[in-house]
Image (tube, rainbow, N blue to C red; front, side, top):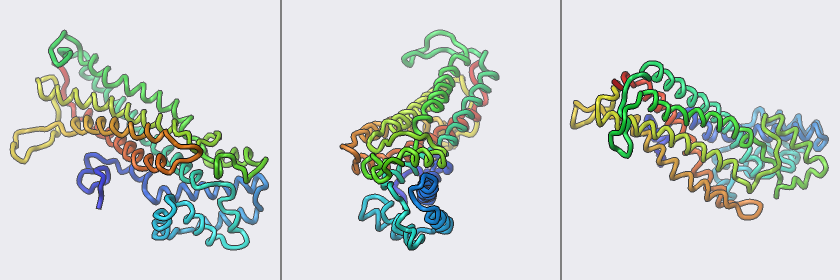
Length: 350
């Protein structure tokens, strides 16, 4: 059973993206959380916080660890987060006398937020490749058709003569700016979350900074002060997702209108109709408009999730879980569809 079109057995073929979605699977999430616990044990042993024997026992246990997902589900129902039950199972797997050193100085939010960032790093790689493919395809259309004539349309009325290159520029230039934005923003987004119970790493004393730096290095993330209740990085990323799908939605809307109102565009592989066999519907272009509007709606929720009371919010945090994965998959799907749509354009202008 599914309640989301992004993993629906039928709709996901149009609106989903398997590569993006797999980074939000339970398997990917648990794997990233275990990476955190392994790296934490290694960092704390290096800094003299836990014994080397404890590190070895934890790393060995994690290599063979397979969680009981039924108990994890029950734990989330009770605790609101998966980490307490996950840590309990890991400590049992490590056994005495070293189990007590698992998760030392960390809190559930450290594990969950760092898992998210680790997975977003892979998502950004995927989305970045798709974004680059769109720029390349639009550049190809420009090279092939850019000198042809079009009539500009302002406020849905014919205006003055332009070239195909002028219109393609309005599709491609925002995507090129989004490439720059993504590269610049990633340095802020891909940062370790490690603060302990209330962000102060109080259990690690004067070793806190050293452990955090070592942990960040092992995970390949930026070493930054804790951001438990500071969600601007994730909201900024959500804004980027909405900007990107909005630009792709403009491309889709233009293609729909060009296909409807004249001979300015020729597409291959349009969608069929059950009642009118002669029709070739611009399905991918329409989906781009829908995905742009979807992300624009979801963005307000991510801005609501900025409001974290004091040092941690359960409600705002949960709201992020509901919204951000769908925005990511919507964006990846839009980038995939836009590249496919550009590939279906056989002719532009006249």
